[in-house]
Length: 397
Image 1 (cartoon, one colour):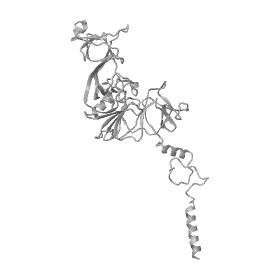
Image 2: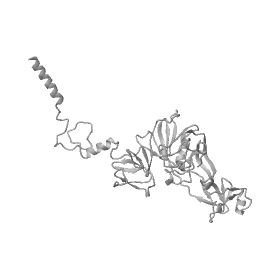
Image 3: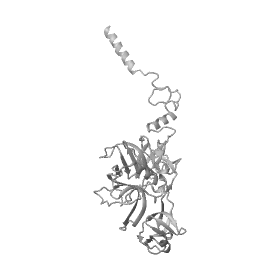
Image 4: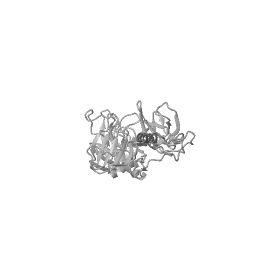
């Protein structure tokens, strides 16, 4: 009798384990789950298909609809303002000859074209002077070098802007900017529906300098593909990214550093080991690379002239007056404003080794940085030579 009771007890326990409650899975004729109420991990009495399943799949990738903008603030545009005017020195005549141009001690001498005290060296690279006064009916300009004739100068309209972003907390995922030009196309770019150049276009477009979060990255051939929305893909020719990383570079122990990503042509600033600023930059061209490494700011200048000679094959003599918001960190390499660079050329290599920023962005970084702050330069792609592979010079703008 006892054995029968024991057997009955065991059978009851087995049935209780194997039995599936009616509420654990919805019936086949149950209604579809409503997207706004469906919770993927919870038991429901509805079918998790259709819109609810689609939203659940997006949620797994960190995407929620409608898409929310990145929690960041555009840098104050007033940081790009300046009272400095610039002009290019015409060191090349119509015949293509490279000429030096005279500098005078007085407006009268300049107007008379007599008694020059010095000359702007000849060179095929641009020469910029800064001027503060115009006299003789506009015929002579007072520059940072002295008085010069208007006929030897071409005043330029400097594009004063900032594109940097300020953050109160570090974003959870990569983000970046849409570029103006990519692969023969001009923004706005029509996003692809898949990570493939052969994929159909989506009809959703992204304008130049749109700031977008990235939810997934796939490598397909030579291109990286970025998921920027539901079934919306842009590629690495069309965007430059920031990968937030609060892990301090080796040797940095105070939670403050500037990160320069040569592969992405982006700059990030960290304070208390949190991202506080990011923007697009232009670093050294191939052969004139910005050197990777960990450095420290050793000198600051509100503005400073820069000059040198690239006659060894990289453009000849150059002169750049009053380069603003300059932070020297590696020999002659510096982070600084580049008044000669137009907006569409940020996000691409383009300097002689320095880190070029827009005027407003350079001003922001200059105000934030102190002498002694760390500068971490790296190239995740591995394309930039290391010290052991390449004899780096002192660098230049």
